[in-house]
Structures are given as structure tokens and as C-alpha cells.
Image (tube, rainbow, N blue to C red; front, side, top):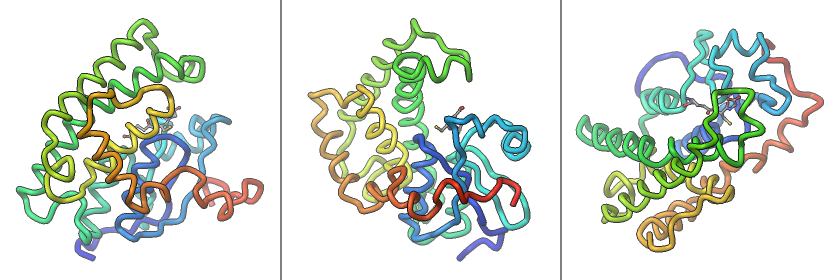
Length: 231
Ligand SMILES: N[C@@H](CCC(=O)N[C@@H](CS)C(=O)NCC(=O)O)C(=O)O
């Protein structure tokens, strides 16, 4: 351990991509944080009790030992890296961290964001139209923008991983989006051979499968006995 900040004591978890990124990140770090499953389908994330913890009404959120609630997936990853720098998933030096963050932001802006908006405005419209402003006429354009981003990355991927020679959170973040969205009709374009090979390399890591929703949580936390948020 590196930084002596408050420890993570509970992850507010659910299905969805950003929670999966956090589970993937924790698994790669070898960390086991107790999880509380927020029932998004029942709208528990919009419950006043949950909104007190995270006013965005979303998952993931990480509770720390001093009561702080950290939200926003990338922020949670950054804090975990500060506390547990080994193995590094952002970088060991200032320069390595800057390069990882550059690629993390590029894949987020050019691929992940348009991909998820394409889903919210398209296949997910009936679920999401009551939760956020949706622009159905932008769905196809967003998906095409995401494909443009993947093609752009395909032309640049030279090394083994997105940010260079080391596996980083940029790989975790991008893989989680592309893998989950490919099951919702947004596949990697056929011609993007380098991205497809990279997907296979990430998929071969045990944490890729173990981070899937319900991989083991069903046995750990049977629904009827779930603790209350405030417990
Ligand atoms: N900006 C947030 C986004 C988190 C997010 O999109 N969470 C989804 C996970 S499925 C969610 O809670 N969706 C439910 C909703 O918005 O009602 C982050 O980076 O953590």
C-alpha cells in the first residue's frame, strides 16, 4: 500500500458497463471489496436514500472507511491506484500515468461515449427515455461515430495494449464497453483486425470473464437477504 487515505469498504455495484470496469480493475489489483447490489431495474438508484449517497443516481459508487462516497468510474480507479499502486494500472511514473490518461480519455471520447449514447437512444430507448434526455434521431450517427473511433484506433494500435507496452485501465475501460455493446449490435467493424486481436488478448485475462455481472455474486448475495443501503 502506498497512500494512507481511507480504505474502500463497500462498492455500490450493478449490471452495466462502468460497474464492470470497477470489478475488472479490482480483480486485476487482487482486491476484494464487499459489494452492495443496487437494483437498477427496480429504480433503487433513484431512491432518496441512494441519492443522498450519489446525487447522480448511478452506479458505481465506492464508500470509504471515513464515510466518503466516491462516484464516477475513472475517479474510483484513480483513487484505488493511489492506495494500491501495485500492480500499476495507470502507470508507475508521471509520464506513464500521463500517457495512460491520454489514451483512456481518447477511447472514452471517441468510442465509449458515442457507443453508449447510440445504445441509450436506440435499443435502450424504452428503458432510458424516462431517466435522461434521449435523442432517438442521433442513435445511428452516434454508433457510426463510435465505429469511426474504432477504425481510427485500429490504424494506431501497434503495441500489445492501447496505451503502449503495459496493460492499463485504458484497456479495461475500452474492452468493457466494446464487449458489452457488441452483444447489443455494435460489433467491431470487420476490417479492424488489430482491434479484434487486442479484444482477444484482453478476453484471455481471467478478470475479463470474472468481472461479468453475476459471475459469482448470485452465490454471494442472495437477493432476499441483501442488506439495506444504510446498514
Ligand atoms: N459518469 C458515471 C456513469 C455511470 C453510469 O452510466 N452508470 C450506469 C450503470 S448501468 C447507471 O447507473 N445507469 C442507471 C441510470 O442512469 O439510471 C461514471 O463514470 O461512473
